[in-house]
Length: 89
Image (cartoon, rainbow, N blue to C red):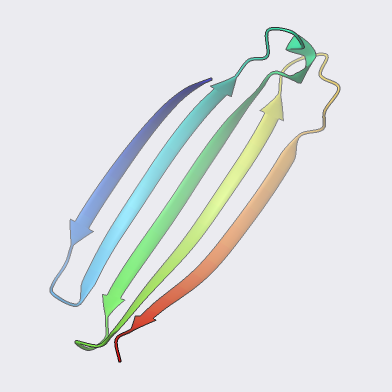
């Protein structure tokens, strides 16, 4: 497996930070080359410090997996949205 990832992080202020990630991955199986595939992933993250006690992190991600020629597997496409929060008591 080989992977290349570029990440750009930007802190806009004490309250907002952003992140953009681009990733390319090549997966090769020596015993089963018919399962070889490449995948691409793009994700955008946004962090928001609402107060001293509450922070939110959101993420939107798009991914695709393309199998090499003569593959036994099917291509896959996906999207993911996540929301995380942390509250200090």
